[in-house]
Image 1 (cartoon, one colour):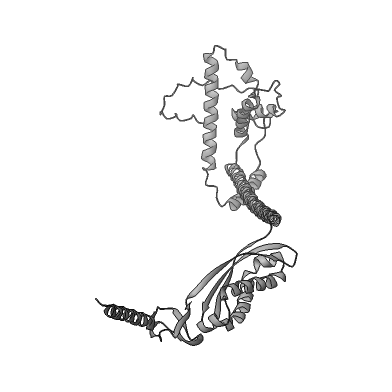
Image 2 (cartoon, one colour; image 1 turned 180 degrees about the vertical axis):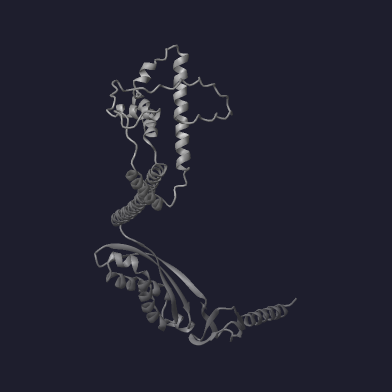
Length: 397
């Protein structure tokens, strides 16, 4: 192959490579959320939006590509002095977005570095006017002031600051220890106050409960005593009314008196038994019950009509007070008492006869008026079996 042919093929190949390169440089595809800054012969030409675009080869070129999405930048901790001369370390996080790609490229060389330095200076100005307590409790206020200053300064850069956050505020280690002690003391104080209030409330409730309990117990005791007193008064009135309605004679009273004598003497600690002075009168009443003449020494006289009238008047008053005692008829009660007295006397006599002691009529004769013969001793009483009715008492003389 001659040299001219070789030169022709080389020229053709170079032309093909040039055309392919030119076509490659002419076509430019811009992705979504991205903007391209185009310069023609070193001067700003236009901004390509997302899509397919054509360039003039070897004349137009892409200066820079700008990301239009919101970006997050975390800056390292910065030492800041508060108004009370304490150095705190503050970390910040900036959320920003490029709104004008041309301004972001031509108005500042590196807008991220500019935002960082502007954040540090603004943060020192804002926190320098606050003390440590305000700095720790005024995060929202600091964020708002930082955002306002940054948004105003970065507006001409084509950057919009959406949000500023303080990631951490770290005071010195010594201050942290003092703050922990203060917080612990405050919590201990609150716990002590709450405990004291709980104890106070508990004591108040306990005292109130005891007060109500004592009041209810006193009311119950008072009502119980009132009911007991009313019951005793009712019983006394009924017994007194029954006695007056029954109109007992001295024989029944003397028999009751003799029944009480063993109970008086029945005491385990009694070493001495004093016989009362009324014992002679009681014996006289017993003698009268066995047929003695009223009016003799030691035998009480029969009650007079005046006494009966006074007793009947008192019985009527008691019946009116009680509204009727509902007891047994006085005559029947008196007859029953006499039968019981005679049965007891017969039992005592038969017991003495069976014991072997002789019966002395002189003793009984001394208790009767002169010339009156004592009655024959009664027949010994036959023991009764369980369920057998008591035989009728003999007629009284």
